[in-house]
Image (tube, rainbow, N blue to C red):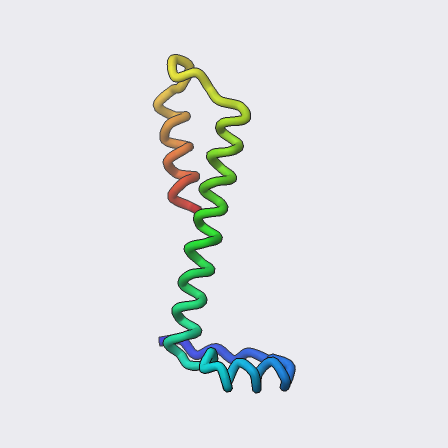
Amino acid sequence: MTTITIELPDDVAQSARQAGFLSSQTLASVVRELVRERAGRKLRDAIDAFDADPVPADELTPQDIQLAIDAARRH
C-alpha cells in the first residue's frame, strides 16, 4: 500500500470530505477509472493516427508488427 499526501484548498477539501470522496476506497476507485480513461484515449489516438496513414497489409514487415505490439503494450 502506498501513502500519498495531497494539498487541496480548504473549501474543496471540506466539500470532498462531506461528500465522502476522501476515503481510500473512493480515491482508489477514482484513480483507477482515470487511468483506464487515459489508456483508452491513448489507444483511440493511436488508432486514429494509424487510420490517418495506414500501411497496406502487404507492406507490413514482422518488424513493423512487433513495433506496433510494443507501442501498444507501453500504453
